Image (cartoon, rainbow, N blue to C red; front, side, top):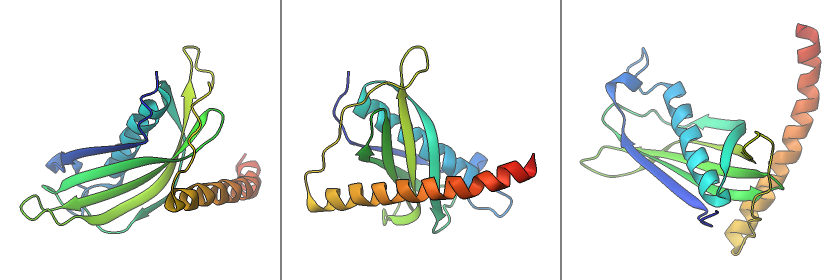
Length: 161
């Protein structure tokens, strides 16, 4: 059953095992955290098991350092029949100072599935504020752009075969 909760934030410390060869947190570790937050958010909204269908527009703005307190915030910004568009912001700070700075942001699309792995309906999210309306409109614009990009990418897939 859906909790109706639209936002989720995961918090943890960046560990030495998360570091790349340059001494900063590895982009792959950040992408894993993004996926975890998107799952937690979409499962809470839908009340169902959800799978990742798309992760895009990932922008690594600033590095995350070992020992930083990391916050991965996820928010539903659009719902389709079985899909949920989740906006993700990753922020980090020195835990002694707690001055958050944006490090990464993106959009993740999650799909609710039933026990057979088939897409299943999710509750509709209806924007209530002007900011929410803008987020929903932005999600729709991005969805249309992804369709165009997908069509363009087909040429590359055919070429590589």
